[in-house]
Image (tube, rainbow, N blue to C red; front, side, top):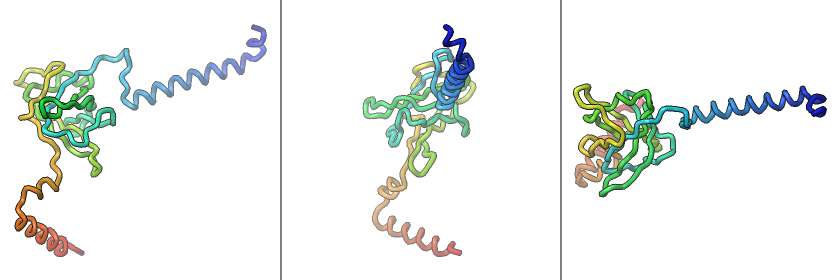
Length: 173
């Protein structure tokens, strides 16, 4: 005990550093969207997509309404040949999503960092409860340009290539 009294300044400095480190750690975890046990539970909804290409759980991919983040993409599963994507909606937006909602998979960057653009539905529809799944008829996946070109016959593809090439030359300068 006398050693502590002798070095009280150092002890206070160490305790202060531990407190500051704990505060900084909590701040960083909160900014990384970690959910703490004392926070309200989020609303977990699902959306069925024909494909969930480039959607990866735990990569910080978000759920957005009109560009505003309302939650994160949770787990991604395959069920009956369809991709079921879990949406973890923040507690403050619990009453926002309705049963007539629509979901679109969209890339945020050219590297296919995906997010879900959610159209929450009308006020006339009932509120979506935990576990509700937006059906595949109300969702749309991201479409790649090569998928569009693959649907065209060879003559149309060649004509489109000429058209785009000439448009580029015409707009140059």
